[in-house]
Image (cartoon, rainbow, N blue to C red; front, side, top):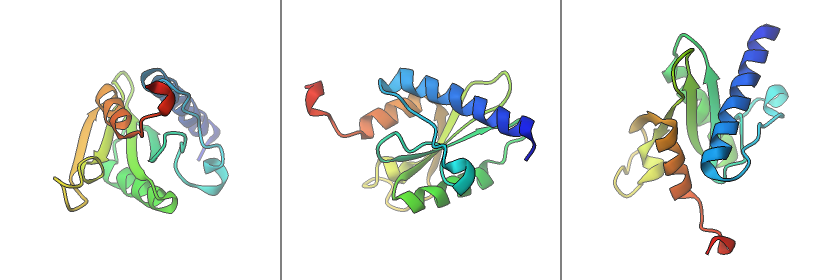
Length: 132
């Protein structure tokens, strides 16, 4: 991977995590260890392993497989965010992780916009005692 590709990826992560932080109400940070050790791009959202892609050519199947592998290593649910130039952020997740009683078998993938993904994430987080 070239330096310009790494810089583009890092800028995309910063952009996405800033947006997630604004929407979720807490700071979402990059997993800097992922650069050297592999793994998901952020672990700062409880229960979720976030993978971020900023590419022109989409490879959703391969990216989703990567997100799943990395999430399994952490015991979290995978969520993939991606964006192409001049297009909004999109998210991919498995409905089994959102509504396991309804979607009993993993593999029911759903694509949504960033705001809807943030709603799903917020609804999955345990309620904090200080928020009551």
